[in-house]
Image (cartoon, rainbow, N blue to C red):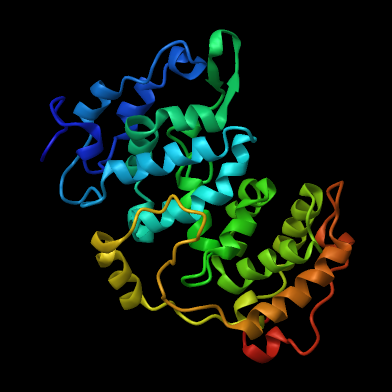
Length: 314
């Protein structure tokens, strides 16, 4: 196992993993409040740089992305950086979903590579130019809350093969990141693309509308199977692996142009169209306020679909 030495410039290091036990101890009240700096040097000594810790991914590429995001969105709300950063983070890291479940990777990025970015993105201005991060989970927490993990997973679940344009749309709406991203609904690729289509057409645009649709879609999933209504093809694992292996030839991505993701299969247009129509009908009856039950929603069943005929009905 190789550990980071103080003589090695950070920009020349590869990305490692930071154990959650180490990360939690470092997130003191003083660090979160902005009174104390992140103890990066001490954390680097506890990081794992073994071969399984995302090899060949260099710190400098992620550092470049974070620096450019802070520069580009300096005069805007930091939340505006999500739509720009998510696809570029996904393109730059080039990891598998299995690797993305390693919390240590995200802890390392947030605490050893770019703690200043986390503080800029999630901190609230205080006196003496401090920025206080209210939740330790933004540094080391669940995948849907951690600063970098949530963006990577959003890009992975909302991309259409190599096309990252749907990711920009999805990440441009904080209610998608805060609510829809957590639901199993978006694990079904046609459903994820249908949500993006509704956002793009502004059928669903406000936070309340997005949350209402997400609630209705989740309730409807109890009475139907999206895979039956809108089938999805398996992604091409070989194409994904080729894209990952080509990381050495990847170009730096701080650019106005979107990079290209793995060409591992686009979502069937017919399946997307089917769910767009279905979600439009749901949106028309989706609750904006209150806690209506599925029966109160009177959710319509799409014509021509019978779960009994497929053998999936009760």
